[in-house]
Each structure stands twice: as C-alpha cells, then as structure tokens.
Length: 398
Image 1 (cartoon, rainbow, N blue to C red):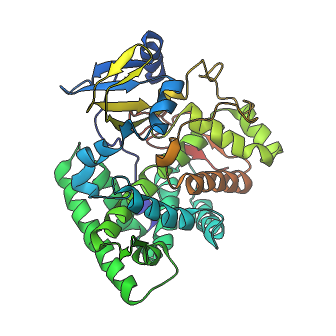
Image 2 (cartoon, one colour; image 1 turned 180 degrees about the vertical axis):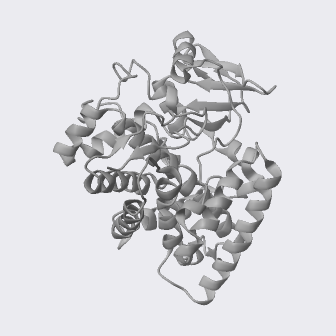
C-alpha cells in the first residue's frame, strides 16, 4: 500500500455548532463580546451547556481541578475509551501520566531522532511526486504522527495505516457511533494482544513501561493499560495531524512571514506557536462543574457540562492585541499570555511537546527541501467547530 492509497482527512469529532456565522471567528467574537461565559443550546441538539469564551475564565476552568473535572469525557466517550488516564483515580492517573509523559518527551532517548527520520522519509516521498499541486494531508501530515506513535508503542511501522484509520473512526463516536465502536473494538483487540506480548517479552517502548507501572503495591490491570493506550492512539494522531496542516496553512498563507522564517530559521518555533494560537486545531475541550461555580456574572450549576472554547480564548483581545492577526512577533517574555491550544494545568495535553516537535520538524523539512514551496490558490481554508484545520492542503513544491 502506498501513501496515496490512504485517504486521510481531518474530521470533526462531533457535530457541535455554537454559532452559525459564516466567519467562524467572527461568530465566536460576538459571543465573547456579549459575555465571556454563557449558557447555550448547541445548535442541532437540545442539550444546554455552559460555554466559556474569554481567556481568563478559560484558564481558570482548566486549572481548577477541584471544581471542574474531566468526568464529562468519560460520560461522553466512555464507550470508546473506557477508564483511561483521564478519568482514573488520582494515584493511577499520576502514575500513568508520568510514564507516558517520559516516553513522549522529545528529550527521551531517540524520540527526537525518530521524528526527524519519519519526517525525512515522508519528504523524500513528496519529492518523488510528479508535477502539479500536491495535497499534504494524506501523504504527509496524516502519516507523520501515526508513524511516530506506532514506533513509540513498539509496533511495526507498517501498522500505522490501520492505527490511523481506526483512530479516525473511533473519534467519530457522535457522528457515526456504529463505525466508532467497531473501530474501537478492533483497536482494543490489537492493543490487548500487544500488551500481553510485551508482558511476556518486554521491550523499550511505552507499552512495556505501562505494564510495569505499580500503584499502591499493585500492577495496573490490563484494562487500565489498554484504555490509556486507546486514548494515546486517539489523541496522538487526531490532534497532531490537523496541527501540522494548520501551521503550514498559516505560514504559507503569509508569504512575508514565510520569507522571514526562511531567512532566520530561529523564528520557526515562534511561527508554530503563533499558528496554534491563531487557528487552534482543537477548538473546544470539556469539563464538568462539580459544584456551583460563579465566573464573572454567570453561575454554572453543579453537574453542568462546561465547554471551554480554546479557539475563542486564544483570540481574546484582552489578552492578545489584534488577535485576528497572524503575528510571530508577539511578546514571548515571561508573563506574556501563553496560548491555550494544548490546554493548561494538570490535564494539559500529555503529548504537547512531542506534537510541537513534530510540527516544527515537518515545517522545517519542507522549507529546507523545497525552496519554492507555495500554497495553491485553490487550497481550502480551515473549517470545523471542534477539530479545526484545512481539510486538505494543496501546495506546489517547485
């Protein structure tokens, strides 16, 4: 099977619509200007939820683990994920995050080199594509995170295709539940087999490390390990994929900024971080209010679902002057506002550093290999209200 045979496309996780404005960010700005926190009924559903649009309130919800829990994730996605490291008991969660975080950290032995090797191979494949505009979604952005992840899990690299497809299907629980549950069962069977194999024949990978975790004198149950691996597969592919496309779209869509980065590669990390703020790949994350909480002039009742709108918070003009502008010169001094694209607090995306390294490596390799790389005028803009990115990214390599 070749790369072009795999029709990978970013897809929204569920059909959430908090506004019906043609301009996504203008719609969010209207909500945020009215009130940073408001009760809403998501369009197309009868569910009443509390949406948080302002930066300060979003940060408060994300970092207050006593009053806002991630229990809503288990409520909505428990059928897919099971009891993963997100919703496990605190002692188990900390143990799991410590082990997984260590293996995903770019500073771990061989991880950065693995990313560079995977990216280089994909760029070589692109260089062999004859003429015309090339869509970077399927043969490039959709492959890098999946190929890196299967290697970190200790799986053969050629299993990336199945992992990527099953992760995409599993992510669509609320749009196609039957397909999602079928994909989840297949993933769970595969990961269970791998966990058992690693217990019998340990390796130097994430799965082996998880089988060795001991919490309060007991090893983790097989189901706990598999559930956390499911989460890792899901999040490690379905969020890094659109992040790569989004950052390339932002940079190539601003030729002056691209020229500045080419002239000074040291600007690339700032260009990536600004792209993640400007068009956050994951727009919304969820929490549950464990008690009545007042944010500003709004009281959120206990048990309510709270939608923290990362994309709206990242364009809050009270924190980011001229927020709709893609500006890599924004202050990065201590105390300057940090974007929330990866969340914040103890539940911050566990693989955020790896994802950022993957994005930087992808952009750097493309700029280095293709001096005339440019965005095709027909390439579509980002879309989606939950998972947001271009559905495809058409570029000219020469």
